[in-house]
Length: 252
Image (cartoon, rainbow, N blue to C red; front, top):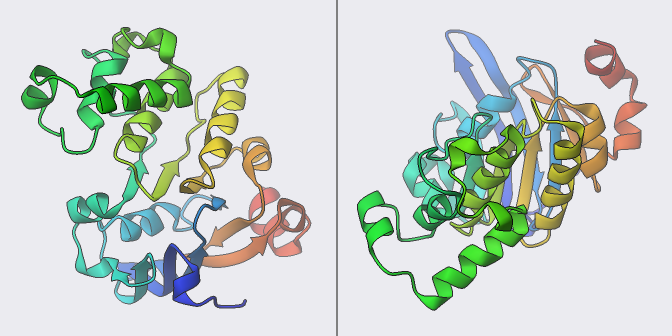
């Protein structure tokens, strides 16, 4: 596989290995994400998808290998909070919005620089901040629910709110873990549209099991992980017809 120059990438993982008690969760993993790219990452359970995200976000330190953000920032030297502030946002499977607050208040809390609950909810928002919240509500399709408490939202709406909360921090890279698990078909379709709309302005990495969903967002490249390294990479069509992929994953 061609190795791009670091300066062509927004995220550059090269030869990354991580072991837990002798088990190699990542095994010489190399992954290169371009600015504005929407990349789907698939693979069976235990393929290393979560560990890969843990390494990118500073939760896990690699035993070996390079992890660079925006060509010159060595992510292995930073902790989770610092990496989030650099511009890498991660959305876990389970939404972490505050259910007793409204959609608007959750977004308000997430705006850069207003992290403290008391401060965020009792200081007056500037015109620019109000505009930004309106813009986020529009992007995630929750303008009509802005004054609804987050706990009353559907599962899909909570996931969109969570994506909006990440976007409020204006990340360059979004890592999104299994966004459509438990969603209705309509919510899955809406999520596909939402994530596709974010590409270009942000680099979006989606880890997912739902193959129909992956097909709907796979604009150019899909990466298949297996046993901690890249098994195959290419268009959805190439991946679906790859004998190795069919054997370890699609044939499950």
